[in-house]
Amino acid sequence: MKFILSLALKNLTRYRRRTIITSIAIAAGLSIFIMLDALLLGMEQESERNIIWYETASAKIMTAENFEHMEFLSLKYPIDNPEKITSLLNDQGFRSTTRITFGAELLVYEDPFPADGSTQVKIAAVDPESDGDVYRFTEIIEKGKFLQKGEEGILLGSWLAEDLQADVGYPVTLLTRSRDGYYQTIDLEVTGIFNCPNPYVNRATALIPLETADYYLQMEGGVTEIAVSLPSSADPAEEAAAINQLLQQQGNPENAALGVYTWQELAYDYLQFAAAKQGGSKVILFLVFIIAAVGISNTMLMAVYERIRELGMMRALGMDDGKLRAAFILEAGGIGFIGSVFGVLIGSILTWYFVRRGIDFTFMMRDMDLGYRVAGVMYGTWNVWTIITAFIAGIVISMIIAVFPTRKVVRMEVADALHHQ
Image 1 (cartoon, rainbow, N blue to C red):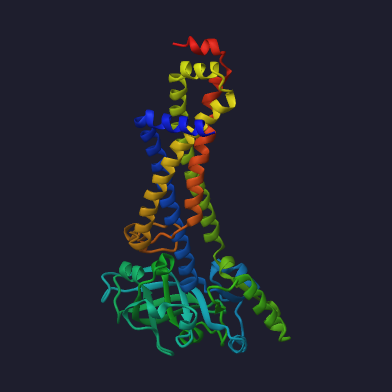
Image 2 (cartoon, rainbow, N blue to C red):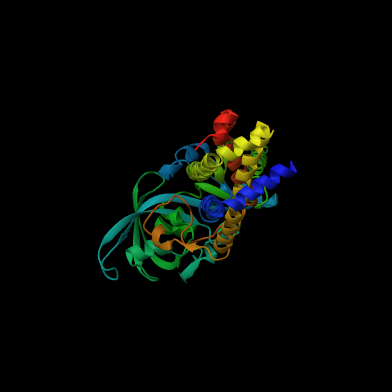
């Protein structure tokens, strides 16, 4: 075995240029894969945080009908008497807040706006006193102030405000339907502008006080949802099951129509998208291995053809076919090892840069929908398992590919090998 290792090492140094070129191809592919995987993983983790903090909360209590028709932002299936449920949750240590979510047409008029216009928006009517216990809008106010209880004000996302050319103090009008289906207009004043890292929220969402929505929409104290905040370490499914059991134990017939839905259920479309992206990452890895396989295959094929007479002499002197194959496989493994080492090193440096500095995609996210809930700088995340997998795979694939070129040599007769030109 010592002789075979020595022979493989000498062959690596004998064809240095070829070894370096093939190793560079492997290193480039692996480093790109490690970098892309870190960036995609970072975007997924930040998207999940932004979904929970600004869009769905950790979980929501809703009527089953409202959950089924969630995309329509309907007011037909509210939770009546939500105070009993929030009080129960607070007694059990859960932080919660009530909301009314509905769709509206936001109307603006010339003076102070540049021109008359309108746009469709999603309105979240929030409780200013408890919303900060679940969501984080109080931390992202860019201009003006957060909503006050009882005032007829509205908060706009910064991208929405930019499109409308709105500013604090500007009047706007919401055109929507009440709980009973009647058209209703609500005149409001822009009291603040928030800059949300979730592009879905920043682009087409506005917030108004819960009392204002309750009055104009004739909700009579009802809400469309009760948002619940859970610890980041908690299992959302287990906590949701515990909350649901708690509601059913109260013996209130109204609670039987309620369901507790985790953020994964509320953001199902995003999770499907993220799963597709993970599949794309695996395709990238597969292509990297194809590149490595082609490079290793060509290198070993050239090495085999150049050494047919040399190998024939070794076989004539008694070297068996197994040792001959092992020498070529170890040689290919050495090339894969060199490429994997430099690939992991370069990939780790690139990952470190994205983890510390990130890359600013604001110019793309502003006008494009890439599916991720990230609006500005995207940061990478260390994924040690990916680095280990890439390193091992670079070596193993190289060794497996080397088996095929050596088959031709070991099948040749020794005399034919010695006379090969």
